[in-house]
Image 1 (cartoon, rainbow, N blue to C red):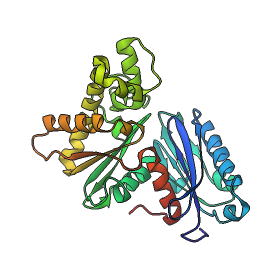
Image 2 (cartoon, one colour):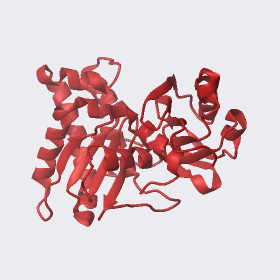
Image 3 (cartoon, helix red, strand yellow):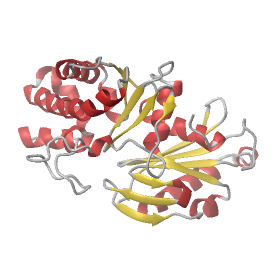
Image 4 (cartoon, rainbow, N blue to C red):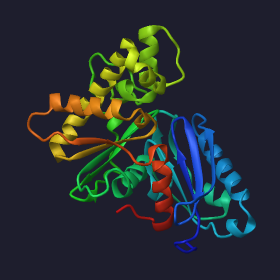
Length: 307
């Protein structure tokens, strides 16, 4: 790729609810930013093209010519080597070849990666996990996924990623069906959309999202019960990972991390109740919030590496 390390880059983070994009310089200064709702299915990629194009064309000409690198990070299962969006249960695509469509639209080379791989890397190396060698970063939003670092190395697997923690079945006999095709996955209880649905089912009151449940928790027993169930699901899903790796820090990122100590304290307490053989890890809120994917994507656009 052309361009120098100090030149601005375009980063696009495709989430289950929102597509976010930024153009930032090497110091992290945001030169342009935008967001649009995520359409269902392959139409999401049209929205990515349009959003990126809007940010690029909105720059002054002197800045636009210096943007020569970009990264697009996707949820679900991604095969960067083949430029293939393999599967996303929340958005609804399977085996979509992306080829050079973004390069053709924007006129610059792009790199593809998994959204939570880069978000987790950003939190591990530059955020709440900085200085720790054994870290699990969970990104909690419309879906749930994570990044794992063991002995100071990022764990990669399969087509280059590991971290589908949201699809660990924790209630396979009596749980809810998951869009992935399984039953009782962590996501069916602990994702933002699952928490909102559970509160509505328990109370009969429609709410705009999971944030409302956390806001009502101090004075609403139904909200506290829904949160306790979600935390139990998160903790149960982590048990195998904690026993296998003995990580010492769990970082919570994504939209739900805005709940702060309500969530971190509850998860640490539940893990303390469940763990007997391995140490209970500390639990912290991520430093970058919903921008973690953009921070990681900007780094990846510049370097092409997550180390």
